[in-house]
Every structure is written in C-alpha cells, then in structure tokens.
Image (tube, rainbow, N blue to C red; front, side, top):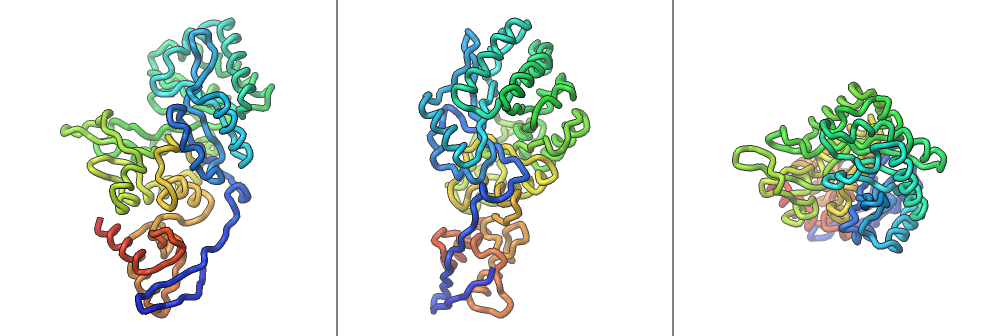
Length: 380
C-alpha cells in the first residue's frame, strides 16, 4: 500500500489503519480447523472466529453406559456452538483423543452395541447442535478396536448423512496402518497429526515431516489432496541429553513468545522445538495444495499480531502476515530492517509492501520504536 508519511525529527511515521473485510466475508477455499480443549475452554471468548472454518470440541467421550459427555458446562457449550455458528464456523464433537480412547471398544464390538452407541452419539450432537463428529481414535495398530472400526465408521456415515452432518477423523501414520482406503473415503476430510514425531532428533514437527505425512496419506491411503488437512502444533517439545524426544518437556507458543519477541519467528526457545511464524507460514503455503490446516490446539496461541492462527489465516487467504516482513518476501530478515530505516528517513524508492507487519508495537503507527523492536528480534 502507499501512504503519506509524516517525518518528524525523531523520524516518526504515523499511519491510518486501513479497514478490511472479515474472513467470513471472504471466500475460504481451505479449511482452518482448530481444537478447543474442554479442560481450558475459557479462552474461546478471545478467539477471532473469522479466522476459522471449524472448531472441534476436545473431547466428547462415553461414560460406562455409552453416553457422551465433556467437561464444558451444558449452557456454556451451547453458547460456544451458537457463537461459532453466528460467524459461519462449524463445530464438531471430537471423540477420543490421546488417553481418551480406552473406553470405546466395549461400545462397538457387536452390531447391537454399535447401534446403541451410535444413537447416543447422534442424540448428543442434536442436543448441542453440532455440525459433525471427528473421530480421534489414537490406539496402536495391534489394538482390537481396528477389527470393528470400518463397520463403525460405515454405520456412523449413514447416520450423519441422514442428519446432514459431516464426519472427519484425526489420524497419524502409526494410527492408520490398519485403516483401509475405503474407510478413509467415508470421511469428509482427514486431519493429519504431523507432530510428536519421536524419530526426529531436532524437531517433533518439522516441515519435512509434514511433507512425509501428506505423501503417505495421499499415496498409501489414496485420500484426495483436497480432503487432507495438515495438522500443526501450537506447542513445542524438548529433548533429553541423549537426543530423544522428552515427552515431559512442553511449552506453548504463547509461553515462548512471552520470553522475547525474537521467539516469534524462530523455532527454538530454551531448548524447546516448536513452529514459529516463518515455519508456520511455510506449512500454510504447503497446505494450499491440500485441504487446509488443523491446529492442536487453539488456546496455546499468542494474542494479537503474534498469533500463529493469524499467520495461517492470512497465508491461506493470500495475505502476508510474518511480523516484521515489510518487504513481503515471506520471511523476516535484515533487509526488512534496512527498508524500514530508509522509509522512516524518507529515502527515495523505499515504499513498504506491507507496513502493518512492521507495527511491532501494535499502536497503529510506524516509528523508531518499531525499528528498535526489529533490531532486537534480529539479534535474537
């Protein structure tokens, strides 16, 4: 954009903030699916729902009688679904989850058990006005549940079709070994958990691992690319002295950024490997060739201009959003600092391609304070 510059002695440039249409008003060819945990649902009120297409409530699991429940109070859950619908965001009940799948086998082992259980699932979805269900069954390939999984999915698909509901699944290579292409074809889309890779000695969620996972499900499981939704983490994990993934070492992206602005664009903070804004934008570019992005999980994000959800939304919808990237080349580096400095000094041929990414102080203006922030990020 072009803007009039007001250059003072301190080289302060003041810009009027332009207005943009909301994401809901723009075409959204890709899915942006975010999980909202039932143990930390309060940050829902802080979400920009215009940056999402789907919210999955994690998790809605059965009691001993096969009736679903989650830890969000009933009226609050209905309010969350209603507010999401006001923004044209679909809400799914996510079933299972890591550590939440042990009680499922007893409900799907026979046709009679499945019929009763599936009826309970449909009743639950209708009670809270869910738009669909997301099967997140995270059990090893040697588990007996996979002997009944295909039949269960077929019967659920029929019930969802009767109610005009959608059905998705969250899966990973270690989960999907016994799931056939015919079973995967029953889902409207498939969320690929391309994180927690314990074979990598440096990053549990590298860009290369994302490519590997997408290729596996596209080629081995024959899932159309437009149904594959790339899963990304809003958290990081550390490593032991032996270079093994430390499952007890964890940091949210919000916590990483709180330790310094330089951690917004990098992928490591205090030995914890995560996906910063540059890597996240690169993954979102990759996801443009597929069905979109899935996020585990929304409450781990930073707020405002440091939000990874904003990076994903802007990248998938054709906007640049890497903080500091005033020349809009997709990354933040010293060339952006040089350009901003020249722009503040009113040097010829120093137009900013995207001034908003340079507003690191988030005060609606560009000045030397933003330039100082840039220097600090680059030094970091």
